[in-house]
Image 1 (cartoon, rainbow, N blue to C red):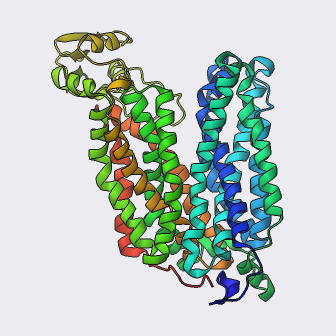
Image 2: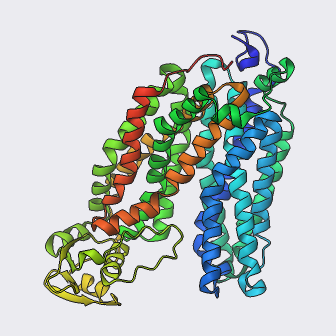
Length: 537
């Protein structure tokens, strides 16, 4: 084995501390996730602070800017910083990304509100979100590669598993900081100025991350490239224009990154939407449920990374995909019955039927939250979907729209405000009763989802690193990762809602993750070659 490729000769001392490498890299990545999660957790507050009073045009611009920063700029950042990492080095690049991410996050806490500065406030927010999204595109790849290129060949999965677990630590930190800030200053003060604290606190994490990373040296694999004069001058061309490399990029995306985005986001994000919107669980209760599951997930990433060192990446990761594929459909049904049994009983006793002109029904796919669905069919469908109620559409004889809830008939034109009250009268619960929740069943299925997600995600960094040569590794692996997580995973909630609204079935949104998981299982079995335990060179 070759020390320069990441594995020292047995018994020979390493010129670095693997513990320091893992801690410094994982801390920076956890900080990245902290930034991501605090913005997501405070989305409603941010909307109130920055977008109140915006006109229609300005509101569209702001929504487009935030959407672009959150998703579209992640692959762009992967290209920019991937090329930098392959030309300049791993250490300099992930120092740059963590500094850009941290500086942008801290600056959000200093921004004026819309009430203070008018339209300039959301414009500045958009710019900072673009900086965050761009930095995010380079941070993960740099940290994963840096750890993998230091690790022994037979311990690479366990070492990079800590990078994967940093997502859990970031979420835990974000939820705790927000919770303690809210409870300390009170909701009124939090909306006025307390929302800034979680963003400003991030500067402490930034200083710690930069300080730790400054103490690190360049990765041995990249040092070897430099010593041999083999550092690429055209990483983008070598990664995406050459046939063999492009084939590996496409294999990485279709064989497991597409599934990772769909499975992980479903297990940790879409399930929150399902519990809160469809089943009526109070938001605070949902936060604590997900926090507990996240704590359970943290050691599982490292465990499955370690297991993949023993049996291979492919068996562990494909096993996670298969578990998610077979568990999501029965699991979400079982969760619904366990969390809100009165909803299931009402659906059976008083089914909802929408009689309408079927040609007037739209597919309510709204990426930026600004599209208008104004036909009676769309209004009725959107209202019922938001209430978490399944329904059936049938053609009406006269073209008018009528919502039937049991024996009640509710005409709908441009207003569907009578529907919620009619649902309550028919026995539909306004929300879930916390005392009726069968927590054993709920947590059983959430843990099953968590095991599936961590089995896929835990060994993923090592699998990606092993697929590409050192010359183009940063560039080639970052793009499929961020398309998978940023686009496939990021589009899951809005796409799932559109599917639910189109079909009238609150479970139909699960076809989105199921499709991508099934696609990846087939592609991984056909095209993905196992490479665990081999020297990276």
